Image (cartoon, rainbow, N blue to C red; front, top):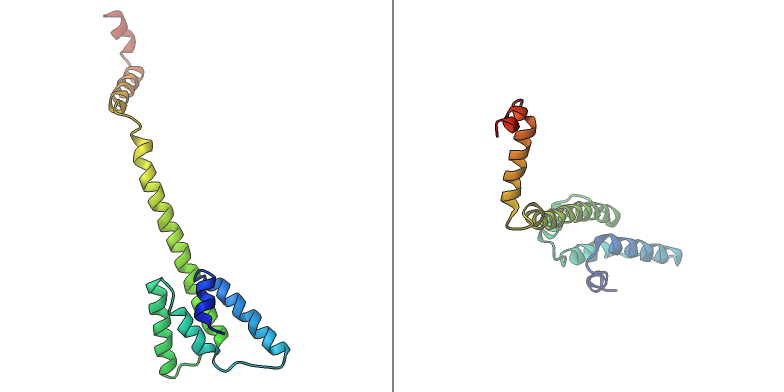
Length: 140
C-alpha cells in the first residue's frame, strides 16, 4: 500500500489519513499481522503535503528521529495531526480575515454621496446637541 497515493486521495487531509491508517493497523492486528515500515511510510507521505510549514515540521521530526529520538507511528500521527489542525485553523482565520477585508470598503462606502451624508449627519447632530438651537430658529 502506498500512503502517498492514499494521502492524495483524501486531498492531503492529515486527519483523514491518520484515521485511515489507524483502521488499517487495527485490521492488521485483528489478523495477527504487523507492519514494520509504517513510520517511514508516514514520514514520506507527510512530506508530500502542499503546506510547506508542515513539510518543514515533518523534516525536523525526521532529523530528530535520525539523531536518535524515539518515535512511534502513533506519536508521529498525533504530532503532525496537531500541527495540521493548528495550521488549518490559521488558514481559516486568514481566509476569513481576507474575506472581511474585501467586504469592509463596500460596506463603509456604499456610494459616491456618502461623504455628503456624513456631513449632513454631523451638522444635524451638532444642531440637536447645541444649547442655542432654539435661539437659532428664532433668529432666522
